[in-house]
Length: 170
Image (cartoon, rainbow, N blue to C red; front, side):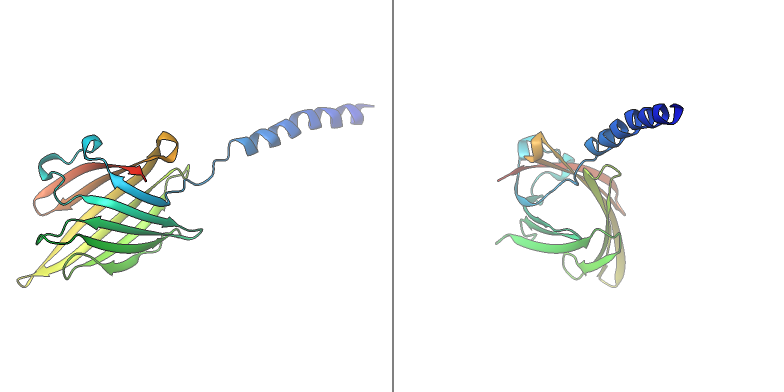
């Protein structure tokens, strides 16, 4: 009789605990879509929005994310679009940056998988001198996935600068 009571007690405790554990597992945030910069909600500081990324096209897959950024050209004229593919396994990806620069980046999801951070080092040669720029970009969604906030911190020889760009899903 005590075995029967013990089995009932265990089932009364274990089954609800298992059911509750599944209700708190959130899906990984999905950043896919076309995004347009909202300058009014963004904070660019002294830099201003002149060279900010105007638009993003994001294609998130199971193991990687493809990010295309469209910005104004430094020389004027047509906009420039750059595309990079980052993997979710934390491995460093090497790509072409602006001009003759080489950009090495890694992506790391937050523990709750609702945001991620891209850490990059860009190296370029200019007039025989090598310069390296470090940056971190934290991506997060809000407003039911309709708003993307990209907070960037860049470290250069001139110091550190943080900006916040807010994008709206199109």
